[in-house]
Image (cartoon, rainbow, N blue to C red; front, side, top):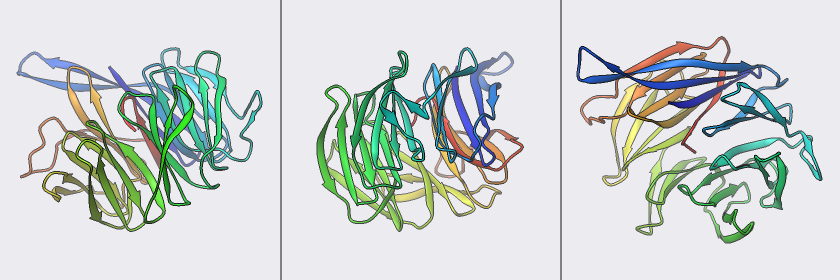
Length: 310
């Protein structure tokens, strides 16, 4: 099984389980979706989510971070104020777990903070970026992560020694960063997004306004945004190879989730309150991926997270 979660405008968090089920009459498999739990403890809109195999974390405009145990289906920590770390009136713009052991947050006061999941003890607090929006992503399964801020910088951090490893300048203000496998990552800017490769020391620029979310599927990148379609971009060819009408005004967020015994799926959430899950196992440049599941959540959706994604 694998889990994912969605966050709403009214502050609700909904967590689901995806399981692979064999079809006896056919040589194929199907997905089974099961609600795990819902929580409405937040008093503001959900800003960002992160989940790993054991935990789910949410940040809201009420300036709190709440953590849930997925298996026990209940809240286990509220990180509004913990030890010497005060994050009142700052909140988190980006959240992520490292191997079920550490929760990392980039906060609107410019700080990067981290807590051990063993007792939720604070282990890192560093002034990383100028206040307001920031974003980060882990590099594969390593303790290294990249963060970007509105001062137009990108920094690499190491959780092992809790130090900054490198810093570079960016051409314009970054909005979001997301990493894939093979040391690839992408940054969304106001007027475009770029795909970088550490392995090949290369950069591909895609001129596109209004992109809100991106995800990697092998040598492809899927993106959505303030438009009525989702596209899959070939990193090698440098062009969109698939583009399809989604039936909604825009995509608020999307994630790629690799479901055990099944394969990759694309999870998308839309302002109209719908979650759509696409089959990404057999990408065909002649036709869009098929819809595996589509269901409503009784509120405007803001964001989503998946167990093994950025």
